[in-house]
Image (cartoon, rainbow over all chains, first blue to last red):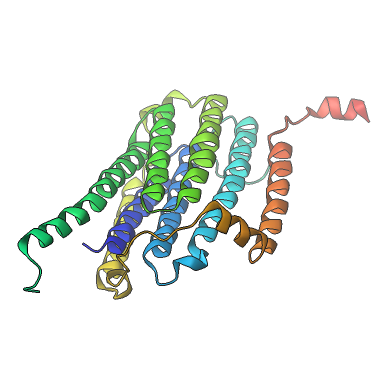
Length: 103
Length: 190
């Protein structure tokens, strides 16, 4: 199989695993973990296109991955802080128990 | 085609196998870690499987020739985000009910949706011309030096924006996670 197609297929599988986890798990932390997996799948796509694309010397895909990692780090920090705040407020981190936004 | 001897052909095949076999092993490791992270019952086990998946992805980046991205992935994801998730799990101490029923009642719809998404993505990859026309030459070189120059010249504005965003996220996370003062203490302070 062509290496780029293999890369894209692995990435599609990882994205689907992350999506399934984010949609089915009850723990808010694991929903966040599923979202992280989806982000990582997108990063793998960028690296694959950079590696096997026509102009790797422009470093476009690599730069996108570096910035995406920084954004994902910020997202994880804020997301986990939100989960902690909700846990302290509602005494649960179960997404099916949290049904109202009113404080 | 006939000019290629059988020996050359087998050597070519061996060389291709040498590049795809590590990729396959790392891909299986990454996917197994991801599946384990999304299906295990205990949250701490999930976090450790997630760290394994992130490490496998970092190794995949290294395998594809993106050294800087692989090392950044290792530092940020395995070093920081996985540990952060473990801390969050320990701080929120999941209740027994959640360990007994880790999936939401309508979970099958989510799995079906994910399978449908994978079907569409796989179909798109299989039928697209771009995915099958990739260059198969040696890995392009991206030295730290060239990445540094790119960050300081062409991508300097995104770099500054990212710096600002990380500062804002840090302040926001600290504010959100700060303990709420009880109402009586707040009114007494006023």
